[in-house]
Amino acid sequence: MGFALSKMQLKSAAFEQGGRIPARHTGEGDDVSPALEWSDAPDGTRSFAIVCHDPDAPLVSRGTYGFVHWVLYNIPASVTKLAEGAGGFTSGKSDFGREGYGGPMPPNGHGTHHYYFWVFALNQALNLEPGLSLWQLLERIEPHTIGMNRLVGTYSRQ
Image (cartoon, rainbow, N blue to C red):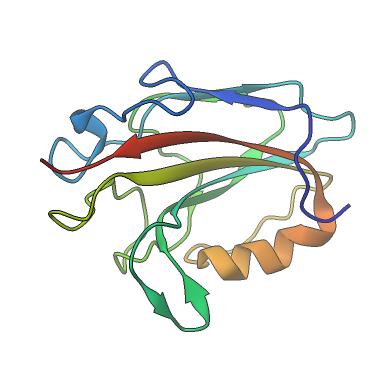
């Protein structure tokens, strides 16, 4: 299928589409991932992956752009929501250089950044090893992606 939006829906109790991400979920707050919930996964879904990426970050390196805040995968198809501060699945490496969620914290005075939380529905349970970067994950899941969508939140430092 390649990467194309599907009718899957992704939402959060913490913020609306295009809304401001609460400080609790940022590097200036408790730095915990927001609760997420998704629906309308395509028939044949066997697992999910979640990522959060900030394309507004003023970084271009390693042939990529922006800043990766979260990479989470090997989520079984029976799971359709993650609680705040979720763990228990396989974590990849963020651009903070560690596994797990790292919340928004754009440079002071850099304006509003957009944080894309993505859910990917996969036609296989891939059992991928821990520590994959976003780009490694995307390379491995692309042939198995049968649906995807995103929730975009914003954040700026005062």
